[in-house]
Image (cartoon, rainbow, N blue to C red; front, side):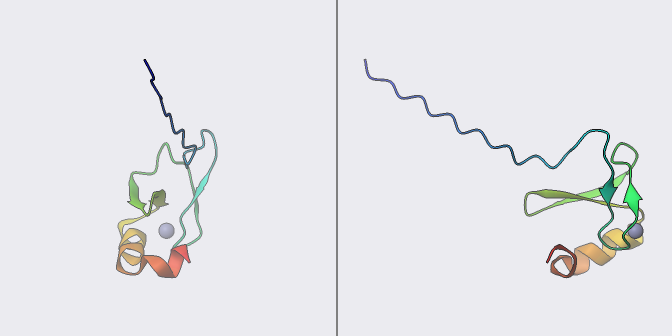
Length: 66
Ligand SMILES: [Zn+2]
């Protein structure tokens, strides 16, 4: 028997426990455990302090992601 078991491990996780995340729209530091507003964009997770900031990001994400 010839069995090849490929396991690709990706460590591309953006969630870091006990660290602050940045609201990229207004620059506010947020606690990810309490930030209710977040979206996934191109494999990353972005948090927002308010619906307004989230809407800004959604309408023009490249402006904030770079
Ligand atoms: Zn904000």
